[in-house]
Image (cartoon, rainbow over all chains, first blue to last red; front, side, top):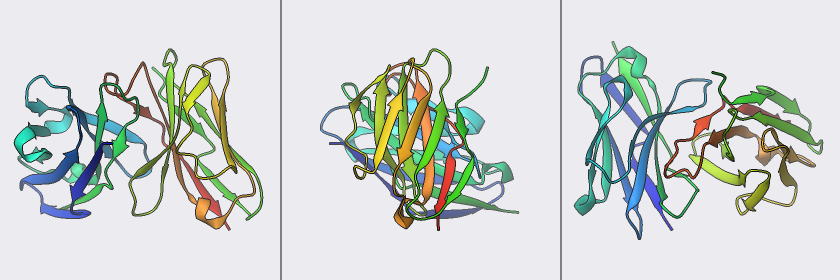
Length: 113
Length: 115
């Protein structure tokens, strides 16, 4: 079975500062990894996904994530936070023979002016 | 194009009543998923449809929960004899194929409150 752990349920950053959201996975086979974002009162939307091509994945809104097999991590970063980045972020994992997407508990990001 | 549509957006019901939640997926998406999001928790998988069949119902919390999909399109999640612990946001998602290859597109959810 695969699972993901998101370290930190809440992250607060200043506008313009680095955003770093941590995600570690456990999987017995090479995983497919995703980051989703959920803005208030909306559904989730895909930020980026890793599917065994390049280990550094670039997504929408200036976010990127790096797959590190040795650390079983897929941390999400953005160099400079914007007020519009305030949302909840979910890391998720699936496998090539599994339709099911397993989500982490989520990290809520607040951005201070 | 139109995204995943869920109705109602909010539902308040009394304990013991039955409720039906509806999901209209993106046209052409064969896979459909129901997840439940409770306060402070992640997304809990409920059920997966491929076409009209549900190969995996393992996430349904109890036999009070059921779901169906007709015409390979609209899906209905039914909760019978609702309990207060059923209060949550119920999210529907659809995709072209298996989740590892095709990203999920989510609706805005139905917020269910059982009083």
